[in-house]
Each structure stands twice: as C-alpha cells, then as structure tokens.
Image (tube, rainbow, N blue to C red; front, side, top):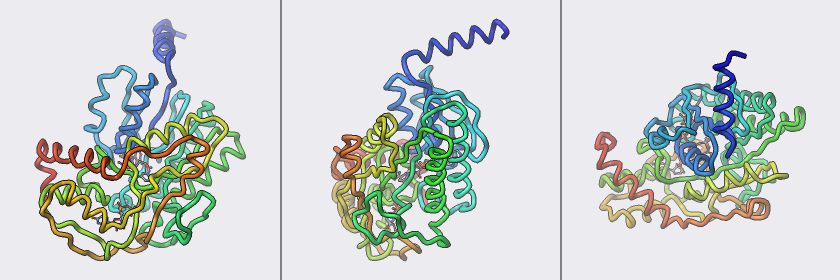
Length: 336
Ligand code: NAD
Ligand code: UDP
C-alpha cells in the first residue's frame, strides 16, 4: 500500500475511535437532517447521502463545518460502496404530492434502495435500519394499529407506489435477515412534523401552518373527519435511535404519538396557536386517503422504553415559530 494511503487510513481510524461510522440515506431531508444532527452529537462519523429530490442543502448547512460530517450526492437506486458500521435507510419522498410526482421512481427508490442498503450491510456486516411507515397499514380496518395487523392496502391506487414499495422493503429486510443473517431493524413511522419540513412539502401540518401564517385559506381535504396522530420530530428521532441501538429486538415497531386528532381539529388548533385570521375551506378528498390512523405503541414502550414526550400543542408552537422565521427570511416561499 502506498505510504499516503497508509497515513490516510491511520488518520481515518483515529478519527473514528470515539464513535461509529454511520451512513444516513435521505440525510438531507426533514427527518434525515435531525438524525444526522443527533448522531454527530453522540460522537459518530456521519455520511449523509441524498439525491436532493425533496431534501435540501439548507437542512444540513449547519453541519457542514463539522469534520465528522460528509455529504454525498447519490441516488439509492444505484449501488452503494462504503465502509460503515450502521446504515439508516430514509431515502424516499414521504409527502403524497412528491411520491406521486414520479410513482415508478418512488417504488424503485424503496425497493432498490432497500436492496442496495441490505447488500452493503451484508458485505460490511453493518446493522441496517429501515424507515418504514404507517402507510403499510393502508386504510386500516383495525384501530389503533398494532404491529401484528397486516393492513388494508390498494395495490393499484395512487398511494400504492409508496405503500407497496415500503411493504416490499420490509419483506426484503426480513428475507435478508433470515437468508443472509443481516442485522436489521424495522420501524414504522407515523405522521411526524416539526422544523425543517419543506414549506411546500404538501403534508398537512406544514400546509396548514404556512397557510395560517400567510392569512390564506386553510385547505381541508374532504370533510376533515379523517384522523391522524402527530409525533414531534425530536420524539421520533429518539425512538429511531433506540430502535437502531437496542440489542435483541429487530422490530417491526411502531413509532408515533398515539394522541389522535381529526384534520379539522388540527386546522382549528393551528389557527388559534398562530393567531391567524385564516378561514377553513373544504376541497376534494384524494383517492384512498386513510380514514383513521393511530399507533398502538405498546411494543415501543416495552422493548425500547420509548414514549413520546412532546404534546401536539408544544410541538406546534415550535413548528409555527420555525415557519414564521423562515417565511420572513425567505419571502419567496410565500408565493403561490
Ligand atoms: P423527506 O422527503 O423530507 O426526506 C426524504 C429524503 O430522501 C430527501 O432528502 C430526499 O431528497 C431523499 N431521497 C428521495 N429519493 C431518493 C433517492 N432515490 N436517492 C437518494 N435520496 C433520495 O421526508 P421525511 O419526512 O424526512 O421522511 C424520511 C423517511 O421517513 C422516508 O423514508 C419516509 O418514507 C419515512 N417516513 C416519514 C414519515 C413522516 O411523517 N415524516 C412518516 C412515515 C415514514
Ligand atoms: N390534508 C388536508 N389538507 C392539506 C394536506 C393534507 O386536509 O392541505 C389531509 C390529507 O387528505 C390527509 C391528512 O391531511 O387526510 C394527512 O395528510 P398528509 O399528506 O400530511 O399525510 P398522510 O395522508 O400521508 O398521512
């Protein structure tokens, strides 16, 4: 080996002595950027991989000067070649408008992204965590949803590219585990919100807050009786970290806040908390929109000692403050 390589190897080894070397796919997204921040705080080296489809450099700008942080522009539908101890696979658009923009690509991202992360994990013997979703339950007929529920998913609808892609990814994770002994973790994330959601992300919390702050009409899809259970991002990241690092429990495990609200209740809360004069208006309900969703988090409590700490009101306050500052600093986000 040339002397220069030996020296570089030594420097690299010395640098990683304190923590692990961790790959985060989708690291420049909403959840990914918070996860990178947490992993760096814990003394790890973080490799943030992203194709910047829905993520952005501004989400990770504050981490760039950290010598333990690296960014790679790459698409998970192409193979991955790194030497790492852990892999968090978050790469996938999560908002319906974005995952429906190029649905074939969405399925490819989930399925091929999972295969490439699992192949890498197999080769380098890394532990790998899949960011799965409550969407694998589809429009659930069991309420609240425990991990043992197999779901009610339309295979041919407009949400299927996301739901089925994530279901296949779970299957691949468990097959690589059984067939190749890959060390996996699977968590099912329920609706999560907080700072660094994109203002034009399209998901309900960011849409309503931006509309409320700008005094625009709040767009409720359908009658607003459908329910969701909203988890603040800090709670979610703590659950994700525990899921990865707890031994002898591979999941799948639900991570979400079980406090359930109708979409109309959410809109009313946001109008009050942001002191807005916005009116509620009603639009068509998109196809296959789940009618109710609430995580059963018994397993997360038992296996990970995890329960969410942040109430919807406290989380919304912080998120409204974030968007308020953002819209002042970047008025271009206020446009139509
Ligand atoms: P996000 O859209 O902000 O982040 C996704 C990130 O993945 C973005 O940075 C995007 O650019 C990147 N990405 C997309 N396709 C890629 C590809 N082919 N190659 C490389 N990078 C790619 O969404 P998020 O809310 O941060 O979600 C992160 C993960 O968590 C997703 O896998 C999502 O399915 C899952 N999840 C999130 C929620 C939630 O409520 N936030 C709920 C359930 C599951
Ligand atoms: N929704 C809404 N107005 C919006 C955006 C979303 O009423 O401007 C509704 C949407 O139809 C769904 C719920 O809010 O019933 C949550 O939508 P989101 O896209 O945030 O997440 P998901 O449907 O994937 O849970």
